Image (tube, rainbow, N blue to C red; front, side, top):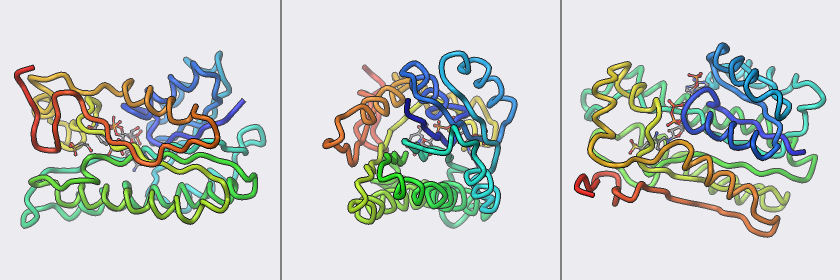
Length: 250
Ligand code: NDP
Ligand code: 8X3
């Protein structure tokens, strides 16, 4: 049986991926900051597969390495890494952007992803196998009004994904990114700092992607034969044409 480590497993895309993997008999290392949610998932999934939970903030470099280095033996071989933890914080023009929001997005979406990867990649190299999926965004392919720093963070993920592909190629490790458009999760609740009404309006009037849609695609990506690597994938809801055009008359 394979083992997957999923960051941002307590909500949205990461959570759906955990349930999808459990259905497909993949043991799980679930990461997030909300221990009660991790416990709940462990109790729901633990009868299907082995589940280990790690509660850390991906910004906390020391804790990231400590947690991953001290995994119990039965979870120490990580076959699949889903670099998913991340969020947008705010949606403001560059001139009025909030510095704490900027720090959060760059520290979590970029540096946090790097810390987790750095803790796991040497293990994959020594076991001579592994598959890393980086969750980017359409915001990593395009820039939209007021998206400035979030888009920068996801453009960085796009570049890191390509860099990983080049550097890990000689080690036979698969690396790929999935770049979703609008997926209805807690993403907009976080972006708008708990203003749930504002968050809901993002997904009003059209049929957005659901986190299960992305989990299904992730499962497709990880179940391709060894010689097939899905390197870069953009996924939109049918109503979305790009980061600013959404058809609300479908
Ligand atoms: P959610 O807000 O539903 O989930 C975000 C997850 O990230 C949570 O599990 C959260 O867990 C975790 N997380 C956030 N900050 C930290 C942190 N500092 N340390 C550890 N974990 C953290 O959003 P989504 O599921 O939508 O987002 C998942 C990924 O998908 C993100 O990278 C996002 O940028 C990307 N994405 C989302 C899209 C969308 O429209 N929803 C579209 C394109 C990409 P906890 O709070 O417990 O730590
Ligand atoms: C999330 C999608 O368009 O809100 O990355 O930035 S978007």
